[in-house]
Picture 1 (tube, rainbow, N blue to C red):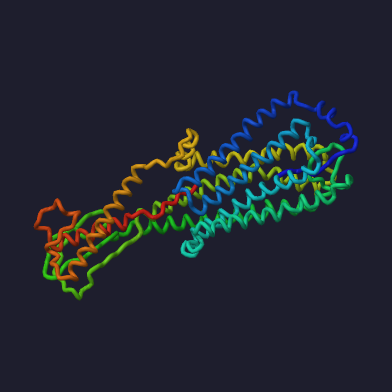
Picture 2 (cartoon, rainbow, N blue to C red):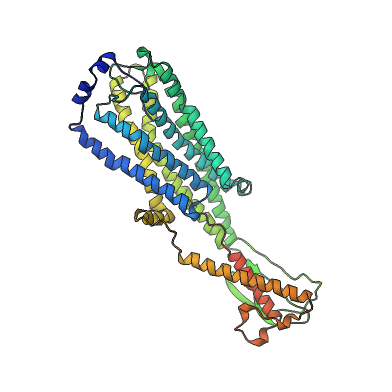
Length: 456
């Protein structure tokens, strides 16, 4: 977020290019090149990779990662529109070398994107807390359109906070005693924007930061409570899945249950048509533990992102408020500190993609492929196994429907053999065949992958 506002002097404007030529690159050009290599280029490249990953990788397309993609858009715009101009001012000893009316516009973009960044992080923390605390209610607002509506609201709030800068900056453009100073430096001067610097810092940083930290601590508390309950429940014996179906007057041994990972044989007793043909019991198992582990890992990564953002922007906002409240402070020292802390804040825009790469395998694999210009999704062995399960499940479902249709038309089920059991002995072409088909269908339905969600 910039610390600047329009400033110029008639004398400087009269000398024009002569003064600018005297300020052109010397030793500071090396510092400018260093900033370009270490901050601007990684910021632009890294955030482009994040946007591509969420756009192209289906496993990354969920509400949290849509917010992260919008955050990457804000960081990318900082690298494209804000940092290069800030670099130009460094080359000219903090003096504004462009047209004066562009200064409030640049300041507006700077404040807008910085505010949008922390608003996105605040929205992500709130959304994840609701998803973990009240998953049923959150699932009603989980669609892509509703996620995009939330993102649009975040941008509207950010625009509302930053819009006073161009409005006031352009209105008082003809009054040097309000917005200009003798150094021709583009900054938010305490005389013209003192109130905005205080209230804007509170609204755009300190209040969202407080909300974000409270919600993050509550999220960690809920995750620990869920982990305790799952571990307590895991110690109790439970039957994961049971399917039971047979025909009247027939019995045969078949595996029908899996309890705590141990397969057991049961002899099916004859039942009548009036008895319940299907029974299923299920409890939380490895999938619940895996989902909880994913949530904990995602919260850890987001916590790192939050902490880095706070560490890199807190010095700037504290100094920004101090420049208004501390009237006796050295103004030149404060402006110098603001320039330094401003670039420290810019660094946070380039660090987020690095955090995703280090802690998320899906992002890491996608980045590796995109760097080599390979934008096709690679089928992993797990994805191929899921494809086989889906095919098998469809065959089993068709067999089940054909069997039911045959029974309605008077065809004996004993004469029917499932395609899945074509290689089995003929003495199993009885109700055991149908029972095994139902067992396979149960396993496939239970193993049928939900929409895989990969958070950061």
